Image (cartoon, rainbow, N blue to C red; front, side, top):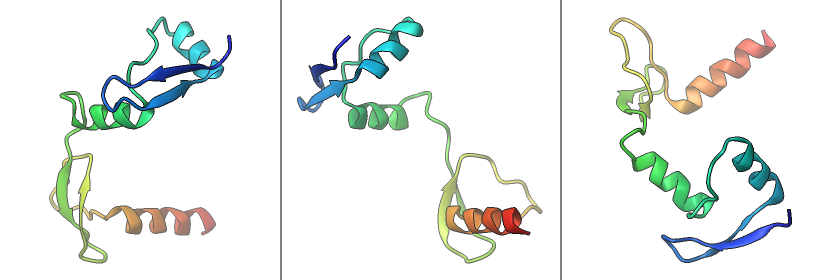
Length: 93
């Protein structure tokens, strides 16, 4: 199967549906995409099945951020940067 050029139904840009993607879609019994990857990710982020995000204030640096879980009272909550930094510190400890 060669790569296929498909026009996005949303933004009208041409995107490449690669041979590898075609194989994955076929294995999962899915139809070829109608939207480019950028429009697909936008649609998923705003869809009804999108994960709920919760506003937080980081307990480490005070920065406002959003997390994909309901924070629990009495437990520290970190912004993305502080969380990544703490993961890397734990990896090398």
